[in-house]
Image (tube, rainbow, N blue to C red):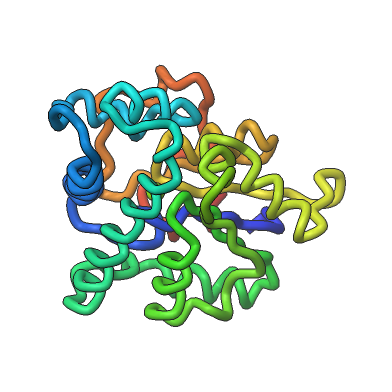
Length: 230
Ligand SMILES: [Mg+2]
């Protein structure tokens, strides 16, 4: 437990979502359908969306969604996500991973600072926090609003930098680590100059290997409990 500040991604890191690729792709399709577009892009084309980073709007425009509809796109996307999540949480199909509470309790007891950095909408993150009674663990939470906030989403380092600033983080005196299940978590952490830990979970699968990533994680773990060994 040598780090002072632990930053966590939420979806698929702390929060188990069954079959995430399908879950998010269904939401994407539903959202695209609510706009006047010629045809639904292929799955292969849709998969590019998740790795498009700051260029996601280029892809949306290619599909026929106008630049001025960018914010409306996210509002509709989030509304679809929220509706699905509420049902799956109520049915106990979306849950915390089994190791989460134990790990958060141990970190809290050790006096560590904890934060969340999520690309999910703020109101959805707040709902998840409340449903799973996580209110007393995190010193700060970064999640997305509307307007310019899509541009500061991970892989941008800005969300992490904002948390570091809010918590008075001094890199000369303390150390921070970001733990997340995806490439964008690693990119954001390394661009913010903090340690990056890839949490593979059992369901983690990538078509490309981690070795090929431009930004490399400092640590790779399978389960959250392993952060105590870093
Ligand atoms: Mg994630």
